[in-house]
Amino acid sequence: MSAVTIPARQASGGVNVKVINRIVIYGLLALFALFYLMPLFVMLVTSFKTMDEIQNGNMLALPRAPTFDPWLKAWGETCVGLTCAGIKGYFWNSIKMVVPAVLISTMLGALNGYVLTKWRFRGATLVFGLMLFACFIPFQSVLLPMATILGSLGRFGVTLQNATGTSFGLGNPTVNLVFVHVVYGIGFTTLFFRNYYEAFPTELVKAAQVDGASFFQIFRRIMLPNSMPIFVVTVIYQFTNIWNDFLFASAYAGTGDAMPMTVALNNVVNTSTGVVEYNVNMAAAMIAALPTLLVYVLAGRYFVRGLMAGAVKG
Amino acid sequence: MSTVATSQIKLTPEHARPRASVRSRLQDALPKIVLAPSFAITIVFVYGFILWTIYLSFTNSKTFPSYVLTGSRAYQRLWGWTFDTDPPSSWYTSITNMGIFGFLYIAICLALGLFLAILLDQKIRGEGVLRPIYLYPMALSFIVTGVAWKWFLDPGLGLEQTLHQWGWTSFHFDWIKNKDFVIYTVVIAGVWQASGFIMAMFLAGLRGIDGEIMKAAQIDGATTFQLYRRIVIPLLRPIFLSAFIVLAHLAIKSYDLVVALTSGGPGGSAWLPSNFMYEYTFKRNEMAVGSASAVIMLMTIVAIIVPYLYSELREKPR
Image (cartoon, rainbow over all chains, first blue to last red):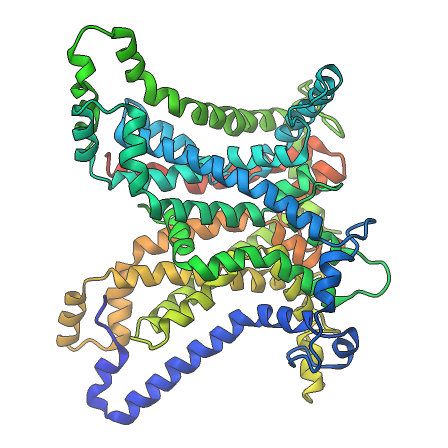
């Protein structure tokens, strides 16, 4: 806790200066709060307005007669490309992609972190460094080879389908995206768990080993029960990142019924047939934002910790 | 710490007994076996794919990958385009935009983040409410908030129209439709998204500063401004470095920002190299050129990140 406060210095300057100082500080802080809230506010109020009110009214005005229709229309009727069945299907696509991807990458990260801190071997730092660097690469540099591989797997899936009657998920865009997000997510999850377990008392692990506990027993009985906070951090971080991803989604599931929410939303907004229904667009955007927003409201503290862990050394 | 960790393995009871040697050897190798799949995946799908992309950039690939090496033609074309300014080539536009966007985005985020952190560190009532408000943009996809920003910046719908309604009819703000200014709207939206996070980093740094140093300086008669300039900001140097690294790599990776806000801008005038790569690879069937631009992006990141990671991991050999 730093002890500097502007008023502390001004104490000798009289009460007035102090009060003015406080007013200026609070004023600036409030002004910036408005700046950050503005887009969300505009999105929210517009999604409850009728088109009439949008065209004739003020952007910042509250809806005069709030209507839930734009939300219903966005969910069930709006056009994504040529199909007009709302965004509900794409919302579920995203859920189906996010849940397995988050669980798998988090579990792998936990195991990797455990090995890299409690079972160190020669070259462990190099291994970690190589995995860590993978977090920072621009994904453009792997986009094309991955597309080629996924294409071949898809063709192999068709062959399997013909031969055995099931493709084992090969070629399914959702499965592909889960795979891609796991592959490019383990760098982050390993980083989180590695830094967390680094601070975990090694003596406990040692004592358990002396008692004859095996590698997995130690992991299950000692590490996992004490890992709740870092699990929350990692799951939230991965959930937010994967839900919000646009580059992979548009490259590997950019068309068709399997596209995730972000791609579908971008299509809704950029559909240029007929009158642009801003209220429906805003409602669709709100629906796409709700899961991550909800997580942020409920567990924002952990989200920030995840961001920090990615930025500042643990 | 590391010595303790490495010697642990030898303490395992199984090692003491010569029997069950296969089992104990397996136990020995188990940690590596567990780590191996993740490591293999990283080697193949990150480093292998990077090599693959580099290889493709030296071929003549158009719509489909071709594996006949044809020399550095793709790089020569990019190099030629770098100076193609009349009319500006897409590549010239992309790298110029990267320069403008990168510089302003990093500079404004750092300045604004530090400023807000210092304000919030003045024992503010309601800090618990303000902090999440400054930070929430980071939790949302830009595809989502881009919808709102696009609307807000549209001269016919958003800010301009609103101010006209309020009586300021001479107000004019159409940057988003102007090919020379569209990149600055990307800066505004980018700063809006990331500055709250940078604020949180600086705030954590400020909270970590030893209060005694401050008290001593205050007793010596330092003014608040001097205190911050001479003592606090120099102490925050590691945070500046981390924040710079974070912002630089976010700036280079920015992609959906441009797509959502401007759909590329009039005539591709808002493109960054990431958009250039995507368009050339997947839409214009110039796979070799797209790969070459991806390699250039990667090299830029390597130049920033590798020295940083190296010093981070070396600093405290654990």
